[in-house]
Every structure is written in C-alpha cells, then in structure tokens.
Image (tube, rainbow, N blue to C red):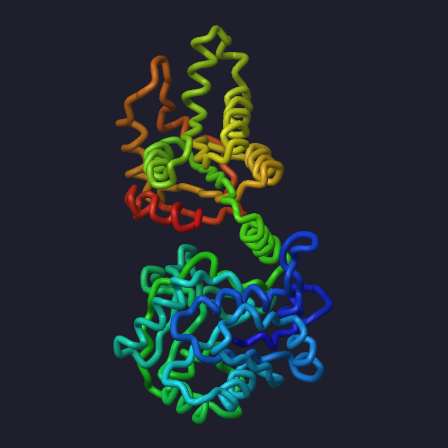
Amino acid sequence: MVAAGQGTRLGAGMPKALVPVGSGPQARPLVHHALSGAAAVADLSHVVVVAPPGDGAAALEQALDHSLLPAEVGLQVVPGGAERVDSVQAGLAVMPRVGIVLVHDAARAFTPPEVFERVVHAVRSGHAAVVPALPVTDTVKQVLPHGEVDLVTATPDRASLRAVQTPQGFLRETLERAHAQARGEARHTDDAGMVEAIGGHVAVVAGHLRALKVTTPQDLDVAARWADEGVAGEPVPVLVVLSGLPGVGKTTVARAACRRLGAAHVRVDTLEQALLRGGLPEADLGALGYAAALAVATDQLAVGCAVVADLVNAVPEARDAWERLAHDSGARLVRVELGCSDPEIHRRRVQERRPDLEGHRMPTWAEVRDRAWTPWPGAELRIDTAQTDVEDAADRIEEACR
C-alpha cells in the first residue's frame, strides 16, 4: 500500500495518508480507511504500508489500527523514496514470499472489496499483470505546447481508452522483473506501465467510481461523505439530477434509472401540467414547476427515498438549487448531463415525439435549437444519447449511485 505522497495539491499541510477523512470525532486518517478496505481481501497474508520518507513512517505507524486486520495477517510500515518507483521497491524488499502482490494507492481509500476480488481472480486465472479501470467518458485531446497555448495533434478514440485505478495485481516474479529493469527510472506512474515497458501483457478488469484517487480538496469532500456514510451505518438517499435539452431522452432514461434504483421519478413536465390544470395561468407558470419539483424531492429524500429529477435544468441558477437541496438533505448527489451529438437524430426525436400528458405542448425543433444552454461543469456523468442506449445509460447512473 503506497502511502508516501506529500499531498501538495490537497493543501492539508501534512502527508496525504494522515489527512483526517469524515466528520467530527469519527474522522480517521485516509490510510485508516485504505487499510480497512484492504482487510476485506480474501486470503490476505501480509500488508506493507510505504510511508513518506523521514519521520513519516513513525507518524503512519501511530495512525494505523492493527485490529483492522485479522490476527494472522502481518503488517509492516517502511519509509518510501523520492519517487513512486522507489516506494514500491521499498515495499517489495520487505514483502514475505507470496505468489501474488497487489499494489494499491492509499489515496484510493474507498475502493470496494469487489474490485480487489476481480483483480485477484484475473491474476489467478493466468494473467501476470491486471489493472482495474473505467471507460473514459470525456473527449481526450493529445496536445503539444505552442507558446501561450497548446495545439491539438490528435483526438484518440475514447472507446479504446480506460482510466486506470488500483489495486493493480501481479505475479510476484513479473512485478520484480519489471522493477529490476526500471531501476533508476522515475518516468513510470504506475506499475502496470513498467510491465508494459518490458514487453509484458496487462489485462483490464472493471474498476469502480468509488476507487476515486483523493487528490484535491473537492475529492476530500466526496471521501468525507463516504466515510460518514459508513459510520452512520444507514444508507444515504441518492439524488440524481438530469439535465438536458428537450428531445435528448431524459424521461426515457429517468424511468429506466428509477426502475433500477427503486427511486421516485420527479418530472417537472408532470408538475407543470398539474399546476395548469389546477387553474394557474400559463403566463404565471415561470419557475413554479421547478419550485414544485424541489418541494416534492425534499419530501422524498426526507423519508430516505432515492429521487431522479427529470428537468431541462439548463442554467446554473436552477442547478444550484438542486445542489443546495442535496447538501441540506444529506443526500448523495449525482449530476447527469444528457446530450445528443447528432443534430439529425435530435431533430427527428423532437419532431416525432408525442405528448404523454394531457395538454402538454411539445416544443418545436426551432425552439429547442435556439434555447439557451450552459454546460454543467460539475456533472459526474455526461451521456451522449446518440451513442449510448437507454439501458447502458441506466447502467452508468446506477454505478455512479453506488
């Protein structure tokens, strides 16, 4: 377990592994949570925690709770080196003779046990090097510096890209051989890359959104929510907020997600039509539908029900209200921005839609095309419904909620 980072980007004034995560007296160092997760690995025999150089080993030793591990599992703390490669080599040097070695970043302290299990199973199935990873959902550009700006040189196909996580699993001899040949090289950022550099093959298994690497203060906020969730011992309700122009498929995706999550579907179109049928003049509707949706969602979250909010939600002011609701209610917020990258598909959907609510006037393509839209920078998920079908979109939302 590599815990030698100084946490400069976190700005906590102490090694990252020692930063408390959680609220009040229940807060525990990040490395405590990481060790707790690793303790669930079946057939675990020994854990080596690599601490920051210098006095870091003594401080980390004090922060570790040996009772988290079964009595038969050994635990050692050793000082790391100047680079990650040096730290992993320091851990390997004291590791007893075992056939399979997992290299795990303590900063990914909330990695679920099933990720460990998938990695170990793949190594036992004949793969000498295995990494967990998630599909890359953002468009990625390869660039070169060009004065004050960077110039794009290529756009890789994201379908073939993966964001790699830990734990990474290896046959011990494979990992030792990769480190022996890479000795003195600081360029490697993960151990699987070192195996690739010596011509080895690396297998990929499914990662998990909770294998987040805590790097920034925002990451720490997310980790604190997860830590508090575990202390409370009670499920935290989830609030999924969809955002997207008419015709991108929000309601269809929302209904599929609700079936997966057992969630309440809070659809602003339904509430607006109810207000109009109740006698509210259409000219007075304004933001009242959104206010009604927030009120209904508030009641559902208060009794522990998951909520999927289905709205256009096009501007920051509307989104801020949902973020405040999640904060005030203690719900886990999953923000989903839906889009349709193919204008022809989007146009056809808008023009072929038929209302499923009495009196609901569907917008025209011209109205949709000219509607103001602000991207949602904080969205956990961005789903292109021109390329992603409904069930795959629901899969991604369900995974984000876990």
